[in-house]
Length: 630
Image 1: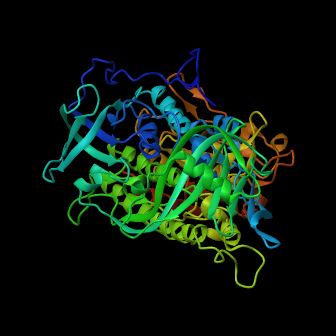
Image 2 (image 1 turned 90 degrees about the horizontal axis):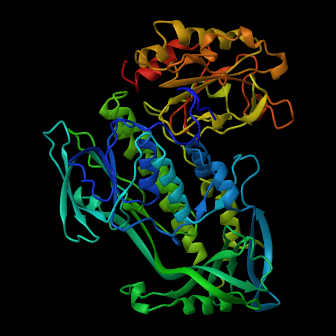
Image 3 (image 1 turned 135 degrees about the vertical axis):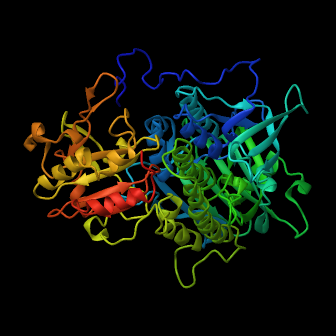
């Protein structure tokens, strides 16, 4: 972690220097009349977006929430490995690892053939496929995830905080206006309930849930179906004779339905998803008047011969499985670019049992955040924003289709959860087949201006274009620090070029020299006068030797750049292979040892291009298609 670039300052290194032009806050501070971005909703999607934009104090961001304050318990809890990688970029991945429950194994239970009224364990599966990510699959209270994002916002240069007790009532877009064309009518939901305030914005993002007013305002509708199946979820403190209570469990009974057990952080708490009754086609779950006692009784019936003795119900809820997807994620039309966006549950809803809701919602806004920042800071033209709906709608459709099948398997009638002619239950097989999906690692963006064709993919097959950058161990040359290469990336809107040397390091060094000095360099073309050389495109070099064989003084200036107001040298740009057995990144990712290569990575950690080290015209052309000249 680097934090003395602008001079020495004691105290919390995560607390950034406050921007002088930030908005005044406090109990009696007025709401703004104009903002660059207005975010509706303080759920995972909204807070993830706000935390990104808070790093850019020149972008005036406002986030509103109808509730009077942050949530304290309940709602989602699963954090998949892809999201953990994203948390690392926000700076709190290690904190989540320390506080959370790690899902290491998943156990499967089904009716005992010798006594069908009782369940027995029929198998276990490693929850995260070997080598798929350096991060674990974790379980953590959604409220804590919110607090971690809020902490990033509070410590950012913008000192951004939500405006609670305000909801979006209406959104209107003036297509003829070039500045602040979106008029948002806010309604107070707190002490001054009913009070109205109007804000003009350049962009609005609706992260306001399945009943989104933002989505309705742009004519978006959720299309899909319902399974007409009631489920309950409860977080409980309880004792039980069930032996796998501290493992993730998928349990199917012969006649009483199915349940999932998810151990929670803290060592004692656990969550149960409990199948309840089938609903009539015209019936809603609220009409059944279920209580927490219904959930506990159903769980005990399903788990026979085991039982649970509940000491405290921390939180519970009843829901009906539905799978719905809106036809568009923004208000773009043929002649006009998008001004209003939706993310998370505002544009896709599904069952919670695959653990994707919170994760996919945050990935939506992580995709959108850097694009908004690029446009609002003049790095890219507004046409970049059209890529958000194109990329995220396809992934939401994949989520809906996969979760639809998974939900049907989990709610299959007795006798229909078995594989034809096999010993493995259908739900166990489906779980194994979808491990990469549930880990958030199945996302692959199609070729576009942001994701190149796979012409040179053979140079780095382990860094597949369109998929997230799959980190691997390296050692930092300057101080022999063991680390993961992907962990140098922060959620700061910058592009990365990871340049891997061939047998002769001169290919890497020549590339670095060109990037730092040539008129045709994309780094120089897109970096403004007075900015640090890595303000837009961050170059990192990786050599094939070990740190003790590297002549560090021979490295070019671009890999030891001088930065900041004091002109301090950055010694954290050059890496080599790990010398302590953690793994050789060249071997692990199949990198071409003879030629080397460069891997271009987007600000949201997805691989955008793979190129030979001497493909300078292609590299410049790629960035020319995304970024505006400085």
